[in-house]
Structures are given as C-alpha cells and as structure tokens.
Image (cartoon, rainbow, N blue to C red; front, side, top):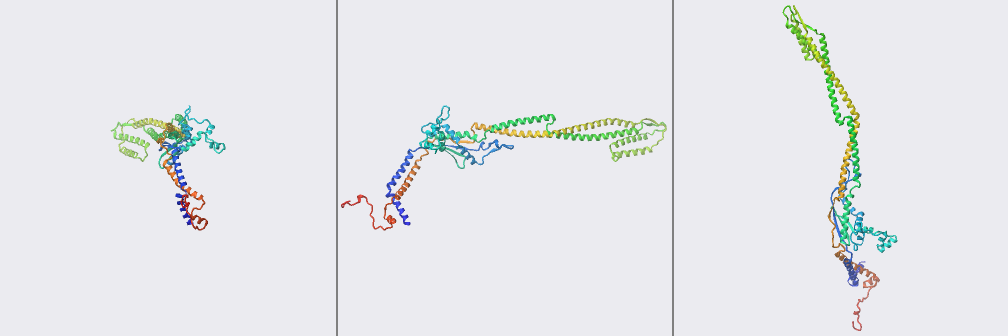
Amino acid sequence: MVRAVEMSVRDVFFLLPFRHRWKVSLFFVVSVGAAWAWTALGPKDFRSESKLFVRLGRENVALDPTVTFGQAPAVAIPQTRDNEINSVTEMLRSRVLLEQVVDDLGAEAILDPEDHSLGATGPSGAAEPLADESDAIAKQGTLRQWGSRLGLLTPLTGRQRAIERLRKMVWIEAARKSDVITVACDSPRPELSQAIVSKLVEAYLDHHVRLNRTPGARDFFAEQTERLGRDLGRSEEAMRDLKNSTGVSSLATHRLHLMDRIARLEDERLQSASELAAAEAEVRLLKETLASTSRTQVHEETSGLANDAADRMRDQLYALEVKQQELHAKYTDAHPEVRHVRDQIEAARAILEMEEQTRTHVKTGPSRAYEAVQLALLTREPSLVSLRAKADALVGQLAAERARLEGLNDHELELAKLERTIDLEDANYRKYAENLEQANIDQALELGRISNINIVQPATFEAKPVSPRPLVNMALGIAVGLFGGLALAIASDRADHSFRTPDCIEHRLDLPVLASIPRMKPKQFVTNGKR
C-alpha cells in the first residue's frame, strides 16, 4: 500500500510537466481567456446606495386607540432598538414599495434597461404597462413560453416580471450595532440604479408615518371627543337645574354651613331658654314680694322725737329683703352673695330691735319698698316678653334649618351621582381631547412627511461598475486553470489503461521486468547506420 501511494505522488509530478502538458496548458489558457472575456465583454452592474438614519422619534411612541385605557393613552412601544431596525428593513423589502417603484419607472425600463428610458409615462403621467397579458407572455423567452404551455411555469405579466427582477436587484442591509440602514441596487445602468434607490426611499418615506399610525385614529378620537362633550354638557345642565331648584351650590360646603348654623342656633336657644327661666323666676318673685309688701309706711311721729335711725334701718332692711328675693331667683341659698345679704338682714333686724319703738305721732305715706318692687316688676315684664319671643323665634329657625338639612339629605344621592358623572365625563373628555390633539399632530407630520427617518446619504451615481471585478475574475481564472489543468491531467491519466512504466507492469501483472526500452522519437532511430 505504501508503494502505491509513492507511485501516485510520483506519477502526479511526472504527468504535469511531461505527459499532459499540452492539455494542462490549453485548459489554463482557456480558463484565463474565459475569465478575461467575461470581464471585458460580460454584462456590467452599476451600484447606487442610499443610507438612512433611524433616530428616536414620535413613531417610537405610537398612539393607538385600540388599546387606550385608564387615565392615560396606551402606546405601542417597540421592545428593543434592534426590533425597530428590523421592522424598517422588512418594510423596505415589502412588495408594495417595489410595485410603486415599478409603476413610477415603468416595467420596460427594468426588464430591458438598454432600450428604454426611465419613467416612460403615458398621457395620464403613470408608467405605461404592457398592452395585455397575452402580449406580455409573448415577449417572454422561448423556454418560459414552453414551460407555460406545459403547465410547469406560471405565466407572468411584464409588471410582475419587473417586480420579481427588481426584488433581486435591490438589497437592504442594516449595519451591526448602529442605527444606519443601507438601501442599494445593482443594475446594468448607473442612472437606473440611482433612480430605483431614489424612488424606493421616497416611497418608503411616504408610507413610513402612515405605517406607524393606527388607521382611523384621528376620526375615532374626534367622534369620541364630540360625543363626550355633548354628554358632559347635558350633565352640567342637569346639575345647574338641580342646584337652582335646591339652592345648593356645593353639597359639602352647604352641608357644613347648615351644620354650623344649626349648632349656633341650638346654643342660642339654650342660652335664651336659661335667660327666660331666670326672668320668669324674677318676675314671679317680684309679684310675690309686691303682694306681701304694704303700700304705705310710717314717715314721722308727732309725739316725741322721731327715730330717724330706726326708720332708715327699716328702709335698709326692706331693701335688703328685696335684694335677697332677687338673689334667690338667680342663685341658691349657699351662694356667697345670698349668705352675705342674709347676714346683713339679720344684723339690721338686731339693730332695729334695739331701737326704741314708742311714738307719739306717726306720719304715714307711700311705701318706698313697694314702689321699688313695683318699678322692678314693670321693668322686667317687657324683658320677659322679649325673651319669650326670642326663644320662639330660635325654635322656629332651628326647625327650619333642620328641615333644610333633611331636604339636603333627600337630594344628596342625586347630587352625588351627578357630581360623579360630571367628574368622570370631564376626565374622559380631557383625555380624548388630548389624544385628538396628538392625532392632529400625527396627521400634520404625515402630510409634511416628517418622521424619525433621515436620509444620511442620497442615492449615489457611480459610473464605475461593481461587477464584473477584473482582479477577482483573473485570479479565479488562474486558480481554475491551475487546479483544473491538474484535475484534467489526473482524469486523463486514470482513463488511460496502457502500461507506461516498469513499475506499472510489476504492480498490475505481478511479473518481474527484465529490460525496458526508453521511448524515443522517430528521428532518434538509426536507419542504415544513420540517424
């Protein structure tokens, strides 16, 4: 086995420079010539590129009425930045954009760019399509026609074939770890590549804002805002009518005022009741005192000396007794003033008893104590009437305020329900009004083609083709020529079963070689002693 491997390696190095050198050389020349011919005469592709920068914008927080809830609008936020870049890339690859580019430039300009100008348009300004499907199918290749007739291939119109070809010509690439997306196109003409990239970017910018917004969002928010405004107006009118009928502006404030007024009236009523009781007791005591007091009293004795001190003491005693009755009407017996007056009365009586009582002539007249009691009674009776009137008025006012409080309690449920309804409708109205304003802003941005996509590099015009590449093609031709020539030599040698070396004879026939004659050219043979 080792011997066979050594023979194979030796045969390889022997075959290349000697036995099949013409085949190897011819294959090498043909390969390099084919690579040169393809580079020089083959179709050329020209590339145009445009770069888009995707920044953070309003599209990242898209207002979506289908998921709006609570006090704030719900928004559709991309999960990651990579997802957003991938979404933009996929939208750039969408068929609708390719169809728009084909319609703008014309199907024939893409299918046969050498014979048609860009954007061949008809009278209406749109790119002219092919006449009909039969004409389009007739213009297809022979193999495609036979394939369509046999049912192996689906017949396509010129517009459909242009879209499929454009899909192969355009490629979209997002740079790693960046927000830049490259849009490129390879076509046989540089102006065609530039036009395709320009149209594709322009079509995407037209669709970008619309694609990132929920269709009908503005109409939905406008309708809801108008409806909520009408509902809020009706509720406010009902609240106004109820307040006018009840005289209540604010339920809590009005209730607080009523409670304060009822408490104040209750205090005044209690105070008035106590004053009325005191006045009634005083008047009653004055009447009793007046009934028990004599209308006349002795003023002068005609026999002997008049005892003026006793008379004055008696007057003081009467005054003290009247004062004692007044104090009894206001205070108890244990009150200091009552005890003090009582002590004065006892002292006055003791002094009066010690005075001499004999008189020879007594002069009488109206009793001053009686007059004082009568004057006090006349003074207190009007006050008593006033206090009674005040007490009755306070009782009436207190009853009226309590009745108003009961009426407020009766309307409390309806007022609270209307207030809750108005608060809820006002909150909803404000929320939808804010969302409507955001939707108006989105619509204005869409009409103005303002988005978070910026064109970093417009579609370029490159007069130098990107393919074929001469150096790469020649390197491939040389490599194919070298390795292909070696493979051809090996294949030719394997296909030849003749014996070429003594080793082959010994290896295949298992016989010893006694002698070998080297191969010689005809000129090397000796004929008649001559070469």
